[in-house]
Length: 289
Image (cartoon, rainbow, N blue to C red; front, top):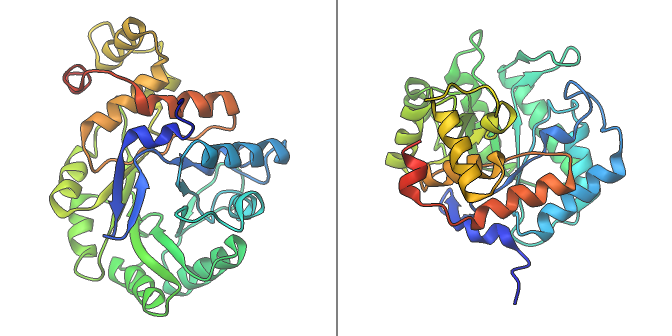
């Protein structure tokens, strides 16, 4: 019988000791409008993408209050609520949007509380399974920002706490304040600056969620002849897969702690990305890239 939930082929990862999800999720940011601002041009099509992702076995969807701002979370709720059992909706707070393509940090406790409560309303949830600090705010002590998330957790508004755009030093500070179950940093075949963070996550049983996971797929023609990107492209050509699929397979091979969340607004690209979960590419080849 043909697999109808192909995301399951990626295996599973456990977030916080209790949330078991397939190790291939979906990043919903691309469903916002141009500049990650406002609603998508075709809201009905965007809702179809979200519903199809769940049909394909994806049970981890990542969003943020800054995507839209706010419209991305509302879109997810309109498409998927009431949520099917086992679906984890992760969101983030700590960035504000003065305008399209503009991002500013705001880690003040009062802002994070308002952001979390706004997300709860938009997502139609009583508790957010995974709430992530979107980025450290240099104007606010990290301990103050995370301390407020810990209070929201104690109040039952957040189940687990994650962070985003953190380095190892910041992670060590963070874990003195509250248990951290996930880290979301930029990481792909071209940008491995968070390699030490991936190792830290493995060591501490924390899930690593790479953002911009298909960086290689978007710049497929720009690699040098002997570079990692060129080797990834060559592997994709030999195996008759897209470079985006090879990029996802590469991420899955790097560490069992990694949970890729490729995003797209296209049904066809969504199905291509999910098919990468079942690719039979040798880990030795992928890790050598």
